[in-house]
Image (tube, rainbow, N blue to C red; front, side):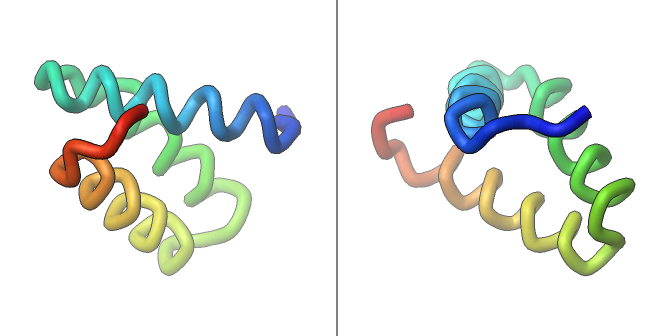
Length: 60
């Protein structure tokens, strides 16, 4: 499944909001989708970016 840029952003922001509530399922799905599409290195990068944004408190 290929997502548009807008769909990716919407998915990322939803995962961040969920993560701030302690629900990490959406974030895990994103990381696994990246792993399947681009490999382990890219998945680790996505995981770090998601976690940093969750901890940052920036609007999502």
